[in-house]
Length: 95
Image (cartoon, rainbow, N blue to C red; front, top):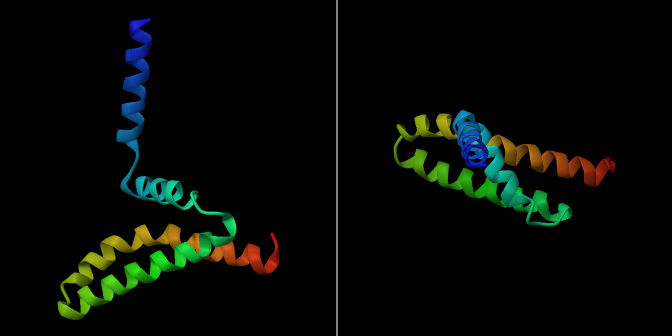
């Protein structure tokens, strides 16, 4: 019995360690956005996207070296954009 518990815990830790950075970002974003009703998820995603874009613009405007940070952070914004366009297409097309 003790070995089963230890193996289960070890397997869970190994799965989390094997996850990449972007998988964690996607999982975190999905766990946050699921709180909101489906019809409002695109609005929340748009607000998050605009906040991140505004933050990045202020950083880049002050110092161009922050452009490197934008290149690193941009893939984390992809799930937000995907949700916005998926929600808008469901709203207008109905699929």
